[in-house]
Image (cartoon, rainbow, N blue to C red; front, top):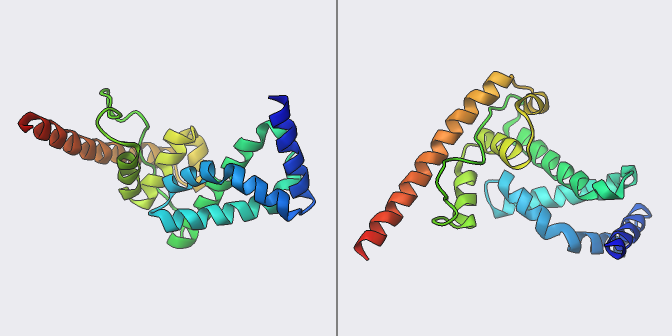
Length: 187
């Protein structure tokens, strides 16, 4: 474990000095993980690539502000989330966003019936406002208070729209699971 931290420390120090080789190593080490996060906030693959690109530009620009190597991954995730928020704000040209859903959509296990790709597609089909807050709340673990501060909306709006987004996702899941049930019934 110490060697891994030492390795990352060396890469980060190289990035702080503007070393292109260190930047490439950092990108190669974390781009897949960060791309998964970007996909959750985007409408599609290309938009996720844009968010990833902007996020890494910011990471390299502000890496000298990183003080705790143990918090590096969380720091990077926060930058990626902020890049997604910025892209959304620019796209919508407004700071007024609405809240969305919750991670545990229903009591039954959808993992057995739905692939990760199908679940991601459902989340991507939510309106941008719902998708953004769903990810902040359910995936990133922000509270309604934190989301309201971040997005300049009320906590009530956040909670209200969480309920709406949850209903949308539940309907989509029920529709797909009933299709699976019907398909399996006749096979």
